[in-house]
Structure formats: structure tokens, C-alpha cells
Image 1: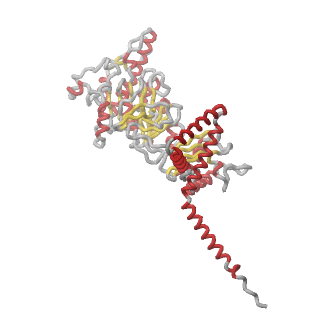
Image 2 (image 1 turned 180 degrees about the horizontal axis):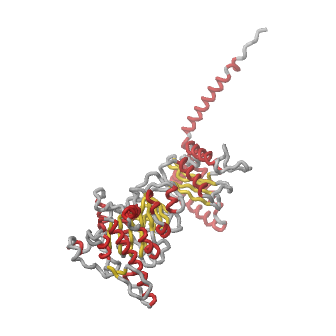
Image 3 (image 1 turned 90 degrees about the vertical axis):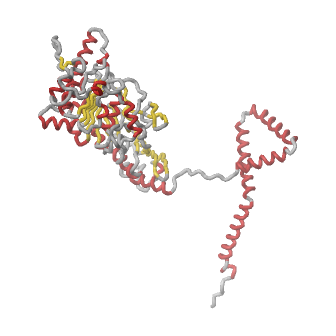
Length: 560
């Protein structure tokens, strides 16, 4: 039996339906284009009506009567004014068109690229924030990342802020566990930037933010500080609660300083700065010296012998600038005896009920760069290590207004004596360094990821048991260096005191013609009633270096 063909309407029905749909869609699009202004006005009228109704409902009942009367009066005035109804209609249509216009929708969620990055971070954190015994894990392979990431922010597709909620059983009290999470987030979020990690152990929450670069254009200048305060550099605005006005180029801005307090009530009276060559430790010492010369005396010992402190030689308040072993030993020995003299004089004045003399209250700064080099030379020559002469200034310097600042490199860190390590509670790490190196110097790891490349003078600082802060030392280069810019050279030279008249007048006098520059200072402490022997500084230096000119070292009371 032959099969009859299907009716034509059934065989060609799908093609007709598809063509009909295309015609209907085209007609709808054309009608939408033609009626778009009317649709916009109608949408605006609806929104105006909804807004008016909401305001009427929010109006208290006792104020509805006066408001209704005011509206009726306005309608009456519009009706009586020539062309009033037409103008009112045009105004309403214009307001409706503006209200009903199409607005660009605000993106409320991440795009595909950002979603992929967040999911990648989530999957990478699963092995660290999950266990097999958790019945309802917050982190699981293929889980919902939106439950773990409470907040996030992107800039040009790169993550700038991330808030992570982690399980309560994660060992966030262990530094090693936190370090693994920080290193993972740093790697997955992109290298070349510095991230700050804030751990809230009570709420089980971690906030990661990208830090802005610290300003490197602030040069040496007079900072607004109180006596006994020294600006080591500048840090993040939210890290300290104080700002100082500084000149940044041709403008004046408010910067957040890292202030180091010295003196009798300081808990961190001495400073140790560590870094690699070119890290900025010499720049830090030069910046401290310029600030200390405002109201104190300075002794500089350049163990590296590079001549970085030649601009300080012969200046008022600079007692000595030494780079040789003999002069350094003699100068540090005088500093130790000067510390003892200050202690004895202050103690006798207090016992007799007298005020402490002015020369005792005047701060004395001992700035020692690269002591490991001098220690090596002293060991080879059979002389005592210069660091041993710092024992008395380090132990008793706070009461005698004596402050010690040392700078050393990482490769010679093991040459520092136990006394230096114990009494230098203010620490700074400058230049590129790993987290392990920073922890070895500061005692704790920083809450940021150290970048691999940093400008000179950039690092971290910790004052005593305080938090670790980022630090950028103000630009204080050697003004006699040919590579120094003219602006920085003039900034440093403008802060240097005037030179001694004796140095300018007769720098080449014979040794026998020079007398003591100042009064004699004691070199030995005797607790008995007998008087203390006194030896001038020049005699000590001449004994150490009989063939060289006199040292520039003078006692702290020279200017009085």
C-alpha cells in the first residue's frame, strides 16, 4: 500500500513559523524605535507618580492639608497665567522624559576575568583552610567562593583589596601559618606590588590591601619636631596618628613621619640600621646627623672609609669625623670617658640639690657606620674592638644624654657584639631584603610583602616592641658627590652649620703649637674621694696617632 505524502501546510510549517517570527520581531523593533520617545515619557510619568505618592505617604497627616492647599493654589495660578497650562504641560513632559531616560546600568559584580581570578584564589586557599573532618567546609574544591570572600576591589583587572573569612580552626596564631597564606595571596594576586595583610583573629577575617608607594621626593629639611625627637623617615598615613608639614618640590604637604624619641625618658635610646650596599643606611645616618646638630654635638666614625661624611668635617657641633682605626679608637674612648664624666657630674649636682649643668644636658650623638670593618682591622692589628668602647655609652647613655646610632650591612651582621644587639632597641632595615632577613633584625616579620626592587632609603623600622612600619628616609645625599642633583645638594648644604674659624684660618699648624681646644675632660672613673685624672682629647688622639694632625674631637661642653 503506497504512503500518501503529508499535507503541504505540515511539511512547510516550520519555515513559515520561522519567517513569521522574524517579521514580528522586525515589526516590534521598528515600533520600539518609533515609539521610543513615548515610551520614555510614559516611564518617566510612572516614576514621577511613584515618587509623588511616596512623598505624600511620608508626609505627616497634620501637614497634608497645608500642602494640598499650596498645590491647589499653584494649579489655580498656572491656569490663570497666559499660556500657563501649555508651559506646565511642557515642563511635566520634559521632567518625565528626563526621569524616564535610559541609564547605563551600574555593574554590581565582577566580570568574567575578575570572577576567574577570584575562583583561582579560592581554589588555591582550599588546602590551607579546609580539613577532611569539617562537615560543612567553608573552603572546598568546586565550592562557592562568594561565601569566603566578603569584599573585593579591582583596578584595571588587578586585585587591590580582598577580605577573606576563614574557618575558626585555622592556626592564625602561628607566624608560619600566616606567612604561608600571605605568600600565596601575594603570588596569586600579582608580583611587583606591596601588599598589606591585616589579621583579625577574633573575627576570623583577613584583609589584604595593595599599598601605595611611599614618596621619594621629600628631601632633607627642618622638620617640625620637639626637642629629643628625630624624624627617621615617612610611612603610611594610617600607620601613625601624626603629620608634619614638609616641602615636596615646590609644594607643601602633610606627611606621616616615623618619629624616634631619645633622651632620658626614651625606651629606645639607641638605633641600629642594617641593609645591603646602596640600601640607604648612610643616608639615614646623614639625615640623623643634620637633625642632631640643631641642638647637640655629633661624633661620626666612618668605618667604611668612603668619605661619605666629608661635608660634616669642621662644622660647628661636629666634634670629630674619623675614618682611620687609630682616630676611631681614640674618639670612641673619649666618648666613653665623656659618658662617665656626665654621669658623675649629674649625680653630684643632684646630690647637692643643684641643677644639672648645661653641658650635661646638651645631647651627644655617636654615629658609627660599618663597625665590622674597624673590628676586623683592630683584630689584625692586635687592638681592642671599637664596639667594646661603646659598652658604657650604650648602657648608660640615656641618663647621660648620649645616643648611639650604628649602621651595618647584612654580610657583617654576625660581627656585632652582644652589647650592641641588646641595647639597640630601635631597628631599621633598608634596601631589598627577604622576610627572613627582616625578621632577624626587627624580631618579627612585617605585615607586608617586601618588594624585590626598592629605591634607596626604603625599608622597615620598628621602635622597641612597637609595630613594624614601612619607612622612606628623606633624600639626604652627599653634597660633594658629583651624582647629586643640584636641588638635593643645596638642601643638604643649607642645613649644615658654619665651619669652625680655626679650621678655616690655619688648617696646617704644627702639632706642637696647638694647645687644648677646650677644657680637660676626665678619662677614668674613680669611686673614691680622690680627684679624677683629666686628659685632653688631643693628647689621647696624639697618643693613638702621633704622626697625624690633631683630631677634631672636642668635649660636649666646648661651646659653653
